[in-house]
Image (cartoon, rainbow, N blue to C red; front, side, top):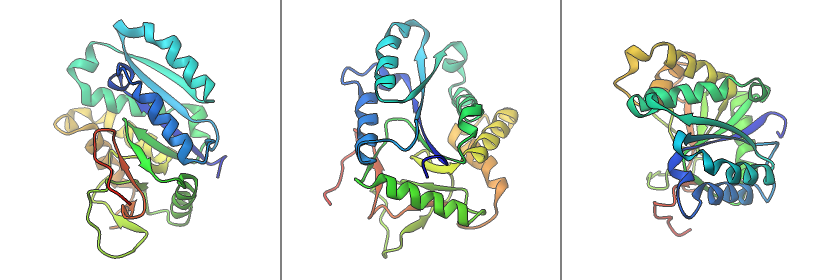
Length: 230
């Protein structure tokens, strides 16, 4: 699986300015969940306000020390006026990178989400297998623990693409984000997540096209959410 999947972190300015350095804690948590070593070389897209570029040396040093490739962008005027469109453009920029497109699949982590498991590598392998064997399935997500799911199925059905961590085909997310950018005028009233989700729906009409792991087995959370006892 190492050659077919890349982990991508989209790290917003709110994570970088935190005194507790939440972006480092997040990445450390993923590394630990993978058993102490990432599959392949992850990519971190850093979205930094123009006035705070002095933070960059420490950020880049940390990423290189953890064998993570940094990609840096600055927040300008448009990011403050059209934040949803800017986020969609960010996703398109990331997934248009030739180096990332060499990976068939991506675990996309947009924001401060952690995944509660000590067997993340196994879950990533299961996600890749699901997408490889089922071309009409578009994503496998790590949903919130607050979802109440009856039964012991490994996967549940999601109504749409989620903002939670997802495993998806790299090219699918690139094309969906490009379509969302190209049709920004028609999609301006909805969030970036919804815009990309609506475009990705065009790729499959299957009722199970968006899946997630059963949260009773593995789930995602932020530092601000309570983590239930196992």
